[in-house]
Image (cartoon, rainbow, N blue to C red):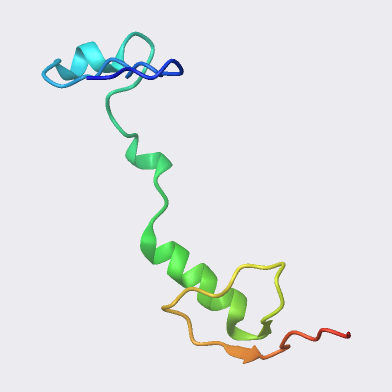
Length: 81
């Protein structure tokens, strides 16, 4: 096989290595459940946020979650030539 002069070697892979070998020292192998937000709380917070305000479609803020009922104001895009 022809090797190009600018050949970039492949990095070593981890197939077949044990999990403890892969994580190395200092890394946590488990997820702390207290650090993971509750999906129910997130949905409720989003619903409360958008309950009394309209969502403008111009860029700059995130859209309401798909589980949230909201009112959108189509601000369109205006280009003046």
